[in-house]
Image 1 (cartoon, rainbow, N blue to C red):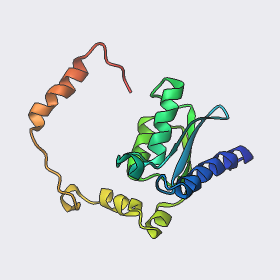
Image 2 (tube, helix red, strand yellow):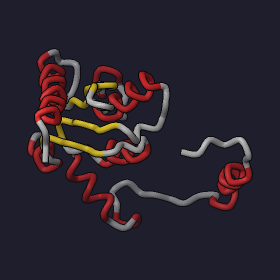
Image 3 (cartoon, one colour):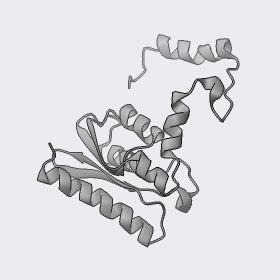
Length: 159
């Protein structure tokens, strides 16, 4: 069950999203990362402002929190985002080890205003051979060299 504090953090994410639209800075998405009851990272969608297709609010908030906390491990943090994360942002949340995700709008809502989130979920569910963007495995045996180097490394930092 959501607490008053959870709602406060979600309202901050929503406010960031709304302000981002009003200032013409980017899309209607905002996100905050919270640790121990305080915001440690914030982000808005800056795809068009930065010409960076990966500059989604959640990714920007994760990057901000990682910088502020000087770590790539956000396992003690929660993500509050104005919309259900797209597959990229969802994956980034998992890579950052986010503890929990709270969202406002759903992917279906984003689809209603012509954001492709829902379409992407549909594409991921398809076999590789049926996706719109063709995928081609190439030089798999040679590519294994980098994985073997990782497996053999005694100085790697696991994540």
